[in-house]
Length: 463
Image 1 (spheres, rainbow, N blue to C red):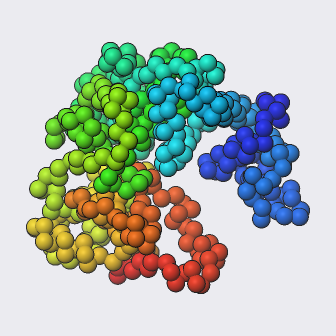
Image 2 (cartoon, rainbow, N blue to C red):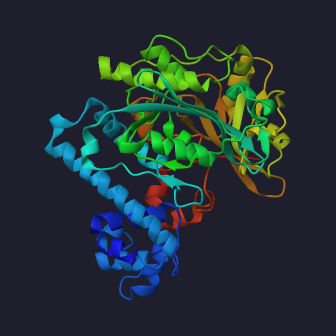
Image 3 (cartoon, rainbow, N blue to C red):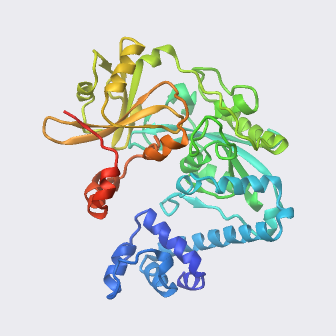
């Protein structure tokens, strides 16, 4: 494995070191900065950008990892070399690249791609599939996939159904999957599945991974909507993908936002995948993703499109959603933030995500909702779907301060450029704050000058 690392180009080693940084990986001498502090007497960790370090230093750091990790780094080297060859092929032979592969490139160029497709495939149970030879770059066979997941008692999600169709909408794979661990919530209203549906199911995640490996042989293109979520559930690292959430431009959503599959189908295909309140149909969703790509290939859709937003039930309009609430904070304590006489849904298992949970605050009418939201102290922004939310702080009786978000259920207008430049980037709902996010305020204050601090928006603390 050391030979493969030694034979890699410096640019490739830079990307692997950055990967270790993003994922907090450590070798025998700690993480990247630990290694520099220990081995560089002159600069220490002050010059930590891997690109500014020599190949020998990068290699020495990567060789501090175990043989298993070095084996994984070898897979990354192959992946990065294949990606580099693909990009070079694009430059030299643009006329030989199929329209389908151009959509693969369009997906990879999306601003959210690097964050969402940075898979922890070094972990146990993950499979890394190669893109293959340069001759595969001219191939354009496509498959579309969709998965359904349940919430398990350990706070993770597990695959329970997977469907794959080809460009003729022929079913290539349709399997129920045994999660092989205790399920906390089957999410029947979403998945359409219950405990009895999985009784006697023997197909496992490993079986599905083997089937996918066969289906995707010789560089086939995999299509899906917000496909990174499906690949996470499948524990399957594959980069020749078209994400239908990334290949269209939206006229009424923020740049980094993506539309729901149902909304996108309404706007592009002219029909809804499901009616309001209807559970997901894994097979229909896979077909819809394929139809979106076929429509993009046929009609272009190069101009921004208006997204048909999903309607919000009247009962939900009289609620505010509180989310990313630390699990140690009792939900009844949230009520001290709001004016009026609201009630609160008790925290339930289906809304718990690791160290955080969400709940709804209900009001008597929509005027009370508006008043309560307006009176909240906090930085206002918009979520990925364009709904207004505030980052609020709650000071508890014991002196601790808890941070979470309160969001409106209704959709708002898109922020204009001046609004975006004056606000922090809107937080995304599917990424939980890390320990560094929660504990790093003091470090940031030390690093930032007073002039910069004055420019920062202030967040009031609710007593």
